[in-house]
Amino acid sequence: MDAPTGPRLQRCCLAFLLADYRKVQIVSSVSEAGARSRERGECRVLVPTMGALHRGHLELIRIARAAARDKGEVAVSIFVNPLQFGPGGDYEKYPRPETDDDEFCRSAGVDLLFRPAPDEMYAAHFSVAIEETLLSTTLCGKSRPGHFRGVCTVVAKLFNILAPDAAVFGEKDFQQLAIIRRMVRDLNFPIEIIGAPTVREIDGLAFSSRNQYLNASERQQAPVLRAALVEGARLAAGGERSAVVVLAAARKVIDTAPLARIDYLELVNAATLQPIEHVQPNSLIALAVFFGQTRLIDNIRLP
Ligand code: AMP
Image 1 (cartoon, rainbow, N blue to C red):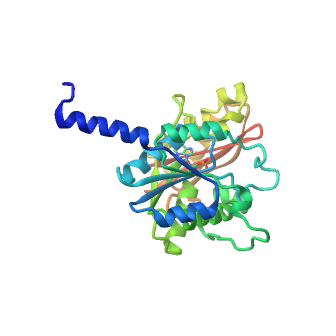
Image 2 (cartoon, rainbow, N blue to C red):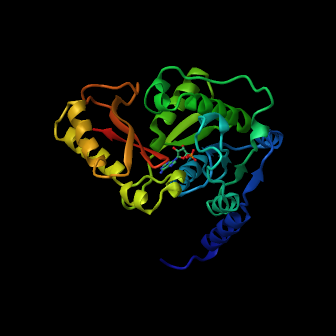
Image 3 (spheres, rainbow, N blue to C red):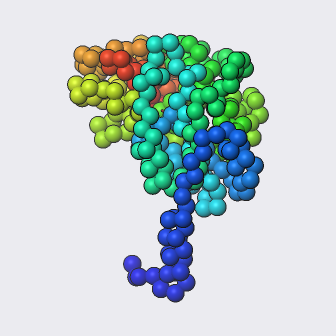
């Protein structure tokens, strides 16, 4: 390509200066974030996270940037939400690499990083929560009672504080994405929810902040999750309709990993998230599997 000259050179220089100028603003107080939300002009797209940012989050930020366009703002929230962890969960030990996350947001071109402390988000005697009552009865909702109540409550609070026009959520947490869409519909949040495809390591393991808990042997065996989902999908694509047969094939793959312990492995309708006995259009295989104390989730859509 020819070197830029004239107006094109000027545009290139301007883009370079803007990229350099576009510094991430880090806000930790709810009132400051609220004030900034009222001041902002163009559209804002939010990526809610719990931090320990990785390539999956980066893809959400990229999608948020594309949705916000050049004049819009990309906001990332980092909040390890105590409300969505059960007793004995990994709330205390959940990774919180603040400096690395700041740098991650800076180099990803994030405009606003909102990182509130728990007592900023939850006042003493906090007593109001949001509960979705249909989609959250299965899968992770069944295994982790109260989890989606915590998720809905914190996401609603983030929506109120940051007032985004759109928000991006990953399909890796398929049930969470479905429940947030339902909450936005049922409670009339004027916010577009954008789903983002799952980003994976080369061996198929979905990126997750929890992967860093895995020891070397667990990490080596963890790709069976994706392999199991692909095997189930392969059978379904070949015409197999029986949930029992499809899930047995997936289970057999997981059983090749001696360190894997299945929490759930289910075939569900992707719209209702209720278990189904036969593969139908819009089905999903979803799983949660423990390696030691580490619980990993993944899913695959069936054709
Ligand atoms: P977390 O920080 O784990 O709460 O995740 C924040 C957001 O990133 C959620 O919407 C997740 O679904 C999404 N996410 C996490 N891992 C991935 C991944 N590997 N690919 C795509 N999105 C992801």
